[in-house]
Amino acid sequence: MIFDRNHAASFAANYPDKPSPLRHGLAGCSLLAMDRLLDLTRRLPASSIEYNAGDLTVGQDPDKTPMNGLSAEETVRRISECRSWIVLKNIEQDAAYERLLENGLTDVRAMLPGRIGPMFKKEGFVFISSPGAVTPFHMDPEHNILLQVAGRKTFRIYPQRETALVSPEQHEAFHTPGGHRNLAYREEFERFADVHELGPGDALYAPVKAPHWVKVGGEVSVSLSITWRSRRSDDEARLHRVNAWLRAHGRTPSLAGAAPLRDRAKILSHRLAARLALR
Ligand SMILES: [Fe+2]
Image: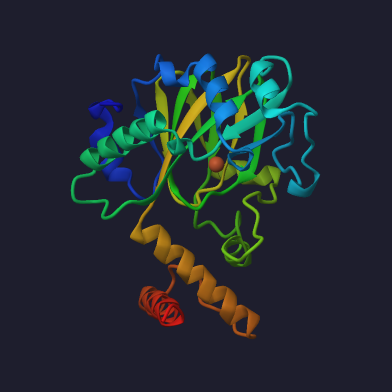
């Protein structure tokens, strides 16, 4: 068992739309110790590793993200002083990490009995960050539980349907090819912030596309993300793709969530169109 069941009731009450603090038992897991992560970095394909300088601003322009001049392996080896951020993607490519991910997701399902439906596109990520590193303001397309393994992080998360933070056009752009996860940030967004201080053993459920940004504390940070998609996250993506199409054809689509029956019709027609395109 990876998660402490004492938080199961609050998680079930918050899922799927609200952030939810959890506790986990992976802080001493040997697979997440630095020597094993260095080994994993060597074995993963280059396409599964992303890294850059870590002293970014919260509103970092993704086209201007500075590199750190090191190899991925060197970045992990020197993470305490190279002021960087590195993510190892799809760690489930390795059998031991796949088991870890599956164990975590089995626990999640057990904490949300009858609530979760099929889980698909199950992916695991490990983030290794230098002291003080910043992950800029962004949103992600999946259900995510971030497990803090070493060091500390301040995780600021914001409501996913607040149009003052992310406009309908930004939601639509996110789901069209080439859309970037980073979002424009303004200081006044802080009034919407839900702030979580995470140390080893803490975890946080982040809902689909809830914008967030993260700052590492004074030590090296290691975090594991276990993620999955659901019928719900799939529907949400389809809705924004239909709205993008309508907008491109001169229409002003209703706000996602404002007209549930119309949303449903859009999702079903997108699903039908996708099925016909495959024939
Ligand atoms: Fe994220």
